[in-house]
Amino acid sequence: MNNPIQTITHEVNHIKIAELVSDGLIIQSSEDGLNLLGDLYYQGFDKIIIHEHNISPDFFDLKNGMAGEILQKFSNYRVSLAIVGDLSTYTGKSIKDFIFESNKTGHINFVASLSEALVKLS
Image (cartoon, rainbow, N blue to C red):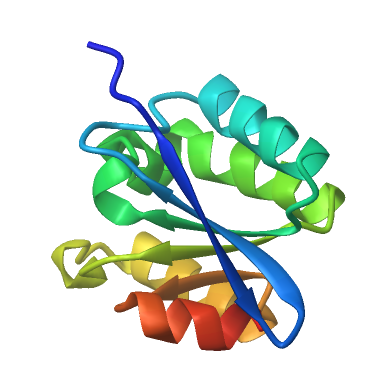
């Protein structure tokens, strides 16, 4: 059940960005998100890219508070995050507003491609 997670380091404008790659879910709970944040933060990364398909669908159901809890920790640690994927599948008003507001602040970014994520984080 445990899928290995590969960390690819991108360096753009002297900024180290971690891209997480896995065949399975990387974040299934708030605890997974916080552990991931801590692990990468202590490895010297303050910018992280994760793919939407590696995040539990529960994250995108705002009623359970999982996204808020994880993203608040990223803000507290001043770690920028880009979530890459086809987000058009999330059609609820709450999640669309959440994505729009997150993208406005620029600290948490929901983007369609890896190249867009690298531009946003660099």
